[in-house]
Image (cartoon, rainbow, N blue to C red; front, side, top):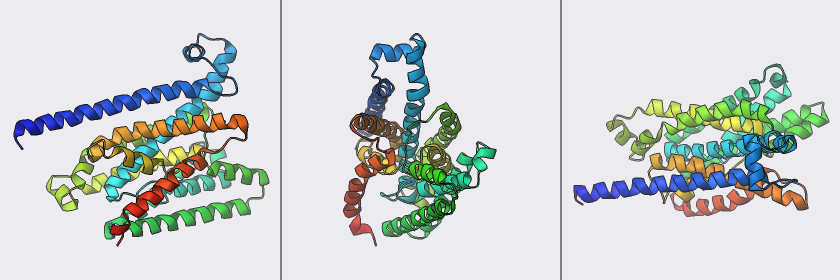
Length: 344
C-alpha cells in the first residue's frame, strides 16, 4: 500500500466518522424535541419551540421547563455517560462484554446511593448522594481492573461482575429489610429499577456537573486506548502511561456512571449494546468510537424514555431500567455465545 493510498484511506475514515457523529447529533436533536413535546398534553413543534425560548404562555412553559425538560436532559446525559463508559471499559479491559451494568459497577454505585439514603446523609448534605454512588462505582472499577490485569479471561470478568452485583444487591436488600419506614423501602425499590420520571432541575444540577466532568475525563483516553489495543507492551513502547490511563478510566467511569445512578437508579446494557453496534462503523478504533458511543447512548436512552411514556397512555409507566434490560439481555446472550470460544 502506497503512502498516498494510505492517506486517502485515513481521510475517508475520518470523513465517515464525522458524518456518523453529525447523523447521531441530528437524531439526538430530533429525539430531544420529541421528548419535550410528548406527554399527557401533546405539544406541536411550534409550541415546543416557543416554550423552550420563553415566548409561550405560562402554562406551556411550566409543562416544558418544570416537567419535561429535566427528564429529557437527564435521559440524554445518563445515556451518553453509559455509552461512553462502556466503550472505554471495553477498550481498557480489552473485553467485549465489559459494561457498567453487567460487571457490577452500576450495582455498586446503587449500593453507595442506598447507604447515603438509609443513613440520611443525603438529607444533611445534598452532595452525599452522588459522592456515595461514585465511591461505590470506584471501588467496583478498581477491583475489576485488578482482576482483569491478572486474568484476561472473559468468563472470569463476567463471574466477578456477577459476584459484585450480587453482593451489592444483597446489601441494598438488607438496607431495605432493616428500614423501619415502609415508604422509604418502596422509594428505594422503585429507584433501583431505574427511571427519570418526576425528576426536576434539582437532580439535573446535582448530577450533570459530575457526568460532564467524568465524560470529559473518559474522552481524553482515546489515543491511549488505541495504543493499548496493541497490548500493554506495545502501548508502553509508544510512550503511553498505563497508570495514568487506568486512573483516567476509573475516575471518569466512577464520576459519570455514579452520578447518573445517584439520580436515576440502575439502568443497564446501554454501555454494552451501543459500542458493539458502532465498532464496525468506526473501524474498530477506540478513539473513534468514544464520541459516537456517547451520542448513540444518549439517543438510545432518550428513545427508550419516549417509548415508556407512549406506552403509559395505555397502562402504568414502565421503568427505564426494565426496558433497557429487555433490549440488552438478548443482545448480551448473543455476544456471550459469540465470544464463548475464547472464554478459557
